[in-house]
Length: 191
Image (cartoon, rainbow, N blue to C red):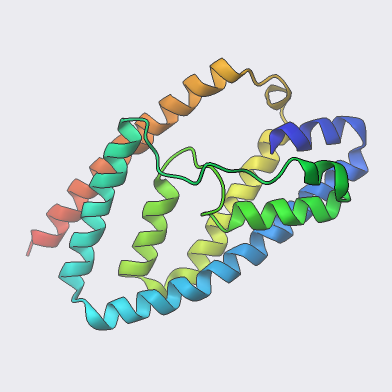
């Protein structure tokens, strides 16, 4: 994404801003679209599974995702928005398509499993918060991409240093999820 927005902003500021605005709109739309099934599934799970079981499932997922991130094996779909769209769509439309793709949270590569765990937390523990949390996550992702696109570093990404950064971020993410698993487990068994 930064590989598109940053050069676009340098080449034509108005075009770059249209792209970034489209990115935000797409993220908002995607978050709302994702919130509906998350709420419905979460409500059904809440009716069928007692709270202790839902919290235990969330702890298990935190351990699983934390371990996978520590092992640098974050689960994700190995695809990105097709690059041909960069040449065929106007900037605002391209940003919207990219924003929807990023905002759906499931359709592109992921750096860490935090998104998976947060989505599971909404479904298992707080389905009523789905619109707020999922729209917030989608907008946060698009905002972070936007901010990164505005930095000089975005234009200077080297594959090797980018990979080192991803590994470090995954390790921090994995440790945080394992810590969260411990906190949730202790809270669940405490009177």
